[in-house]
Length: 86
Image 1 (cartoon, rainbow, N blue to C red):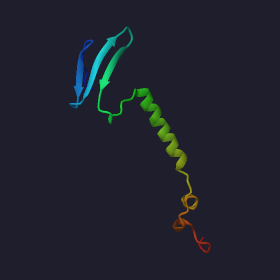
Image 2: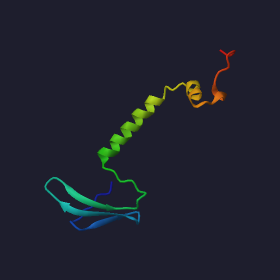
Image 3: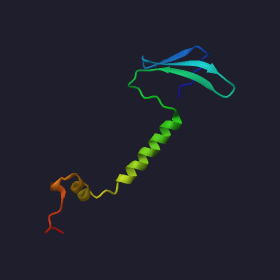
Image 4: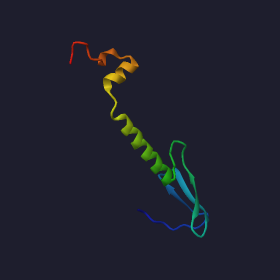
């Protein structure tokens, strides 16, 4: 981890197109501004962690899907068992 010291109004540049600027400091917190291209996702850590957790939970819910049943639901006859097969 790179650790830098910055004063209010000072910035750092990441990968030529992301600018992080210290806007304000307080007793227990700081405010930063981030200027980045729209295609760059910027999330607070707790939001990122919550999204990751939900993604893991939703993927576990679909692990037990019966492929033949799913194929019938979407009308794909190629995946269905023939009546004579066991």
